[in-house]
Amino acid sequence: MFNEHIIFSSAWREEKTIVRINPERRSKATESKDLLTFKCRRMFKINDYSLYLVISEECAHPKHSKEIASEAISGGVDIIQMREKNKTQKELISLGVILCKLCKANDKIFIVNDDAFVAKEVEAAGVHLGQEDMQKFSIDSTRKIVGSKTAIGLSTHSLKQFEEANDEENVDYIAFGPVFATKTKNYSIGTNDIEKVLERAVKPVFFIGGINLSNMDELLSLGAKKYCINQRHFRG
Image (cartoon, rainbow, N blue to C red; front, side, top):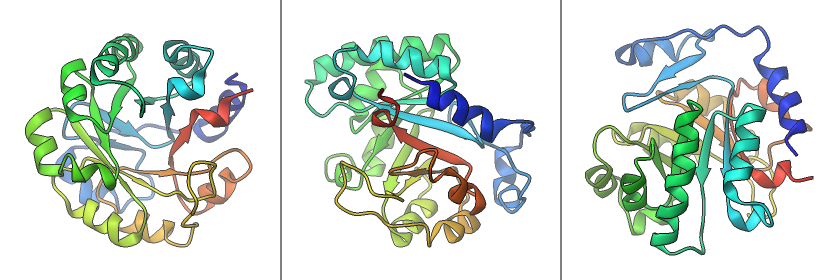
């Protein structure tokens, strides 16, 4: 199921050297084209050439999310986000505990989508918010719920939204997209702003939306080094 990713991963990571930096130097470091690691001021570091996978049981069926996550980890995925839109909070906590334990055991990063309370309860490394989620959980209220040691990620869909997230102290990483067309979004923003985003970024930026082997070279040529993939791209 994850053979595509195994090829994908080895292609972009081959002979890369990871360089650790002090978080106080991140502004200067992001100006360097040799930078391959950003150390999050919260609980974890995010390396360049990181692969971030969004999973849900709806897409995993008939497999369990734990099985999908295990295959992803074996294939080289670095970050796993639990994205479930049709579960109760109790069900989210139950599944989150399982996935968080799996990620910690394999030194991977576990993120909860949408729900700051669930992220805190399962002791996730981070919580990810969409633009619409901020009607329920503002950035400030999310920080109060999860505390200072849990990362907050934010989805952005335009250069303006990116710049706002980039300036927001309590946002630790940014998702930018959808870059290409997807089955779940009725729009895409294209690649025109990618270089501007990378030039201005003072925190990790993951590019998301329709990314696969067929368009990877285009993103690499623009300098993109972090990618967020939906598990649909790995289904056989």
